[in-house]
Length: 193
Length: 154
Image (cartoon, rainbow over all chains, first blue to last red; front, side, top):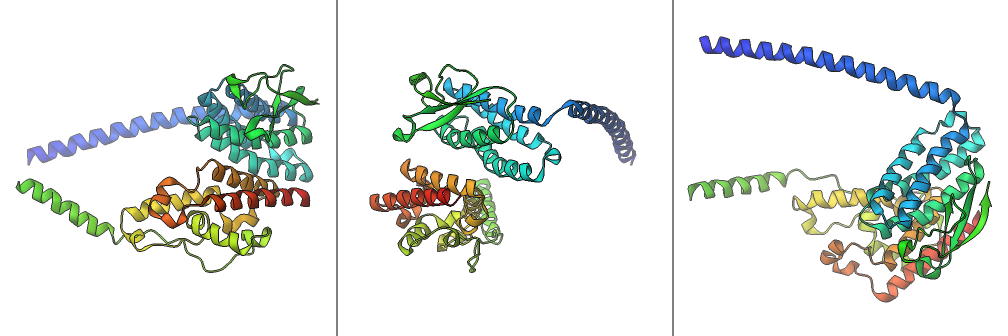
């Protein structure tokens, strides 16, 4: 009988301890939440439309640079960053026309970004999605400002000489499709400002 | 010895029990207005190839063989169908944006060319889903032509 009481007593203290702990955790969580709620809203106040596209473009460039170095893992990280960047665009500030364009691009590009994020060990597959993603990004930059000057480059050899395009921040050609095997293959098609 | 018998019995009981938990079947008789055949031109010969080699995982209608009802294989199969439809669903092709439709067709041609589709684990069991060289060419040509026709319409 004594032992039963003992067990009950222990359970009680254990439970109350847990309660205290979870309260503390809640407090910490609330603080953290307050921070996250506050900081983006202050940032968002200063943010313009082009700034929010900037996160997408910069994740793309990060991905492109990873692919030029044959680094599938970094390309995957950039893919995940791009997925998040697309989610973070505040669509309410867009006109209905622009919103439609954006949603169309997001629907497609988001899927490519996701697949690139999932295939860190399959760079060949990442490049196939990168090919289609580059077209989406080109349309995105054309419809919205990228906030920086970019180059639209062409590689005639990729995909059995069917060719593919990509966007770069440098004038110098660094090919993301052929990677370190043929880094300088390609030419500038268009300057995007 | 007794312990081994008990373990074997437990496995057997578990095996029998899980047979009663069958995942929902992927079967729908109706052809939706967003079916691929309503969006692009799908000749009958192409329809047959796609149905045999792709539709089990990429449409709303799976052709279930008898062994697909044995667990835990049925769960494995259900998860494959879910993934397959998530990436490409011929029954709902029309719901994709024009941009996506073109990319899906491009990816179809590419995966046939690279032989990543149909999955080797699938054709191992469904030998009739194996694509002949001619059928591969037919799919690639069809997908590329359809992709270009959508691009022209825009």
